[in-house]
Image (cartoon, rainbow, N blue to C red; front, top):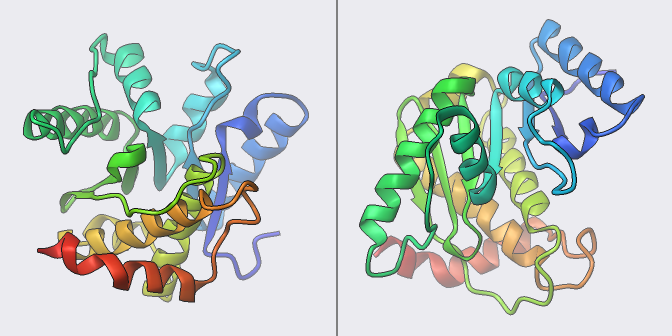
Length: 225
């Protein structure tokens, strides 16, 4: 089942119903036994109680944990009783907002212990956190048609970027990534997520590497200066 695999990925939606929930949890256990990295997008449906044992088990098993801003705020409130306000990291209060988001993300990382935590911030980009530090990666400008699938595109870009950069990707590699590399990896993931929004269909918008690199080459100079 995992022959040749370097990463197993799933989402919180996969844990909603049986028998899929049991099958996915068993696959997570198998991945751990075989030292295959586990990536988890902790998205959840808004019409159910999200704080399930299955969600928590998956989050605690994840080497790579991805949340969006609203999921970060939810888990911060659920686990720490704290509130998180805005995700506007470029506005007049951007510095304070960044500090609040990093503090919240560090608390969630401390709770679940992923080697790499990714927090998507919509139009404001993303935050990547590991043992070596944290990096905000700004969003790229595109003509958006529909936002559906942007998060899936982001995690696809993140995993692609990581596995291309590291031949035998390990949790130790994830923990040791420096801030400059976090920026490169995060910007690649942001570019994939952005390009997904340029079409009406989530899967139709998944770009080839050439399109991602073209978008980055057009805008990366402004981002780095």
